[in-house]
Image 1 (cartoon, helix red, strand yellow):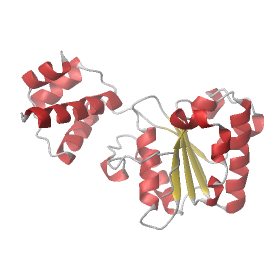
Image 2 (tube, helix red, strand yellow; image 1 turned 60 degrees about the vertical axis):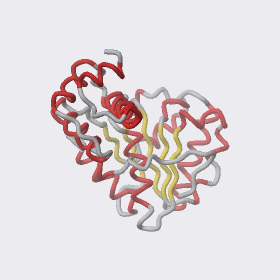
Image 3 (cartoon, helix red, strand yellow; image 1 turned 180 degrees about the horizontal axis):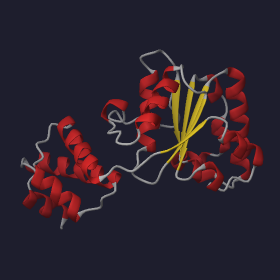
Image 4 (tube, helix red, strand yellow; image 1 turned 120 degrees about the horizontal axis):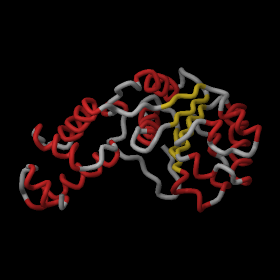
Length: 228
């Protein structure tokens, strides 16, 4: 995988540890696309914490074992470098562009993205994009680009219900070698944000604090670390 400007993939952003909930269909479509046997264009959208970034990085990880070149481009981090950054990536088998809302309404970026679509199509390569809104509500000014955003399959990622969030927290804790009691999980769910991304950030913070203090993660320890 060739990644520009120091952008790296999270090692734990993989299909295997994504709790799918009601998102089984979109995950299956993304896995096929990443392996080169699915749709050429996919657009996924969802609110913060639903897992768009995780899934795009999962696609890049999944492309590696089947010897497909891939890149993950989070526009929230790359916008400042300008639209020329999109040049030449059409040579890769798979391009995953995240945070598309960051460049909506920017004429230069929209034109560059439009041309990338055309080059990817000509090369028969796969383009997967994500944003926080569906194409029609994204605020794209270039009509031809908005049309291309709808060329392939468009999926909305569904938020996890509370029971599935508990499963996801337990899975993440187990992957990190943490023993997380049900009382701790209930406390996290009721005293912190229920946004899944925020919950995972909290868990990461508790993991670091637990290692530093050489203490188990208990409710009193959570209160101390999080100041709740």
